[in-house]
Amino acid sequence: MRWTIKPKPEQKDINALAKALKVDDLVAQLLLQRGIDTYEKAKKFFRPELSDLHDPFLMKDMDIAVHRIERAIATNENILVYGDYDVDGTTAVALVSSYLLCNYENVATYIPDRYGEGYGVSYQGIDFASDNDFSLIIALDCGVKAVDKVAYATEKGIDFIICDHHRPGDSLPKAIAVLDPKRDDCQYPYDELCGCGVGFKLIQALGSRKGETIADFMPYLDLVATAIGADIVPITGENRVLAYFGLQVINSQPRAGFKAIINQIKKTTLTITDVVFIIAPRINAAGRMKHGQHAVNLLTETDISQATTFAAAIEKYNSDRKSLDQEITEEALLQIQENKEESDFTSVVYKETWHKGVIGIVASRLTETYYRPTLVFTKSGDKLAASARSVKGFDVYNALQGCSDCIEQFGGHKYAAGLTLLEEQFSTFKTQFEKVVAETIDPNLLIPEITIDAVIEIKDITPKLMRIIKQMAPFGPGNMSPVFMAENLQDSGYAKGVGQGAAHLKLAVTQNGYGPLGAIGFNLGDQLDKVIGRKFFDAVFSIDENEWQGVTSLQLKLRDVR
Image (cartoon, rainbow, N blue to C red; front, side, top):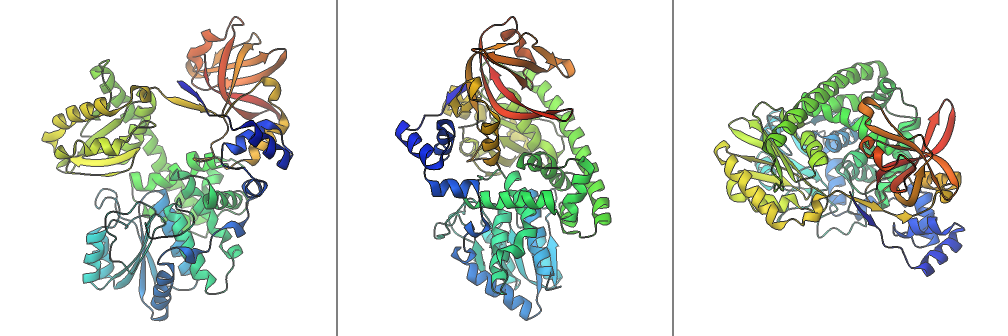
């Protein structure tokens, strides 16, 4: 790995913040690196409050959206709540539909079929609305680029309210309202909301007209926190407040669907990381393996016994997804190894029988293994479909644009995209993609980078520091868990490989007479020779707590050693 140490803030700024907050220099440095440079900002960071949330009516078109929904309810119209099949979309649909159904019964939900309809607003979905007398569609986590689809709906007498967080195209759909903080003409103070977050602002606005306060919306924040974690949006500003209180709901009063999942995994307190790696994959599995509506059914169910039945079905989808994912990953790795040349800048694999629902996960796994811009193709109807994943710092969307002459269609963003092409174009595309990446990528980007907040010593690692770090959670983009580096460490003499195949590195480190302090390096078992025999080594790590037989102790979670 490439080790990159973040620039240290000016010492005068560190001194000033340390004095204002009565903390030591290291804590002040960590806060300054996160843009927290005043007492007031630190207070909002460490003590988020629901009153810090912005007025939803600051969002462009919010007043129009609220009036249209109020009119639909007053005139007894049928409302269809429509959303994407991933975690952000299904949580958003569950949130808005369950809120509306509290006071109004003519509300139904619609999740497009991943394989039959694909991403976003579909003609099939609009036809369903038309056939069943829905006159208003509220689209969540999709729709901001659905210009033709919205025009089609208008011809059929159906109005659209769009709640999206993706960047709009050159022109907006002619919907009744387009709620999207990334609109150029939207002055909303925070533009990094997820789709479920935009849906939350909509129900907050609707409720405020009936005298409801932010406390009335607390029960919906478990959905919002899950979407924030799963969609990898920054956990800063308003998202931090929503995630902070959403985690409280998940851990104290979760909805029946979450409770049913948590009961299965038998974990007591969930962090945002647990939400991302335990709850989110299960919700996603419904859309990958069966249909996203199963996730909405789970998330809107209020009876715990029924929710438990739904959760058991989703657990099976997730188990099937894991088996497929592992099987396809192994086949894809074999393909790469058989075709690998030293000069390769990309990984492009294809097998017509691979399951379309998991190729994105497989692309992520291959990127982790070989650290190259990666495409995984499968057969989809009479075309090939692919999921693309990239490495940090390289825009795979731009690279695909450079190959657009042999692509049918593509979409996505810098680090993840999807595309389709004709089978006869595959070989040409593969050659061209390799050429475009080779010509445009900085070779350094093909070595994984680990960003280090600060260089510290073992003696700096105290229970007090750990308490402060825990208060900096929830962690995520924009506020990652602090990563440290320490130099000239030695093992106390008992370093060993542990786990299946001795895959992990376990040791206890000392430095200048301080220690020993336990350390674990997952998947670093092959680094054992660097630390045995009391050799001096440097390490990059985060600080963690290890609980063993009822005793909690500090330990280093190693990221790399050298």
